[in-house]
Image (tube, rainbow, N blue to C red; front, side, top):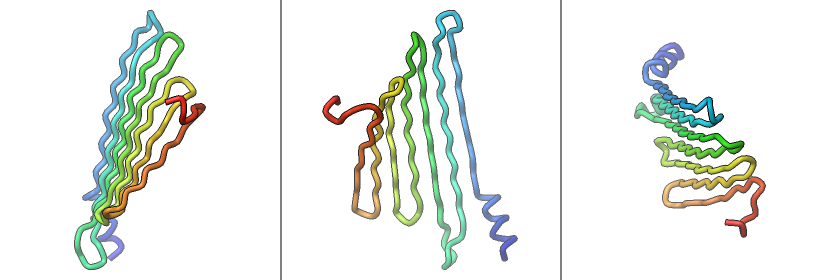
Amino acid sequence: MREMHSMFNAMHSQFSEAAFLSGDSMNGGGHIYKRTVVEKYKPGRSGEAQFERYEDKTAKAFGGGHKVTERQQLYQNSGGYQKAGHERSMDNRGRKLVCEKIGQEERYKNYFKNLEECML
């Protein structure tokens, strides 16, 4: 039974990744875009299919001594749980907003890096 479960996971897991890099070597600038998606399907206790999905998108631009980053993350499963994050930063300062949803209940949380809430 364990071997079947492992084979099922191997057959129904999906991983994809795309990346793009572009640069201007004369001015020391450029940008990067990366997207990763992982999906996993497995049989539940009563035989119904359960899934988990994770997605990560990152975009970075750099030049003139600065780096700007934007990142979006998403996790969801068949149990109705969802968690999403959206992060933006410039050099060593940034903000991340995380939203968690369980059924009808939603929770939001802000994270700051070298910023104060009143600076927004």
